[in-house]
Length: 298
Image 1 (cartoon, rainbow, N blue to C red):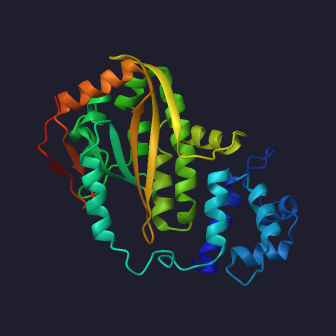
Image 2: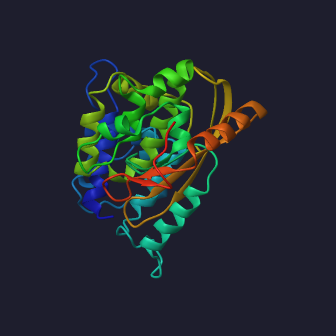
């Protein structure tokens, strides 16, 4: 990553910190004081000028920005200054990796989503759609023509089926996904796509308040694994873990999440969903959705 891009990311993270008295974003002076770095170092860093930061200085900066464990991992990696794609082995084949990922996705019996760092949905199986009564037409309506729907839009849309199906469990779903979104998009905070997406999401009810809640939440986020326990509106009490796997790519990564049942009732519900849905899925790896193994959704 180029130095000026890293500087823009630091500036974006600084502006997420708010003065508790005025509500205004932190100034460079405030970040300098909190991180015990000089104002000149902060200014040079954000402007993309040469600024030498050792390990302790980076740790102080990450602590001042209140980054979680997942975010710190991304932050320290970006600070190295390598170009995007340099971490991939010379033999890496993105097309073959996508084909292997879709083959694995097609074999899953649990409800599952595949999305990128921005939470743009790349694939979703009918078991997941059926669980939350999400109609494929409604899902596509969230995106513009030729675009991908976004999973956070699915969660926060005022008419989201997930609000109805998860009931009291919806709040925890929203917060935990926003924590993951923070970490996954940290490396993209300087991009036009990030700013455009955030402007769109802030128009949705509850998003801005929940986004702020995740930033001021003192609980650390150190794993992509998370658990949910709630009473579903149609199938009753559910207990499951969200198992996440990342396929690394030169710029924007892929993330596969599947729901792992944690009790006998949830196992039975997921098995019934698989049988009812026929095992098919929709994919947006190319821009328009393609039905795979049929387009059945009863």
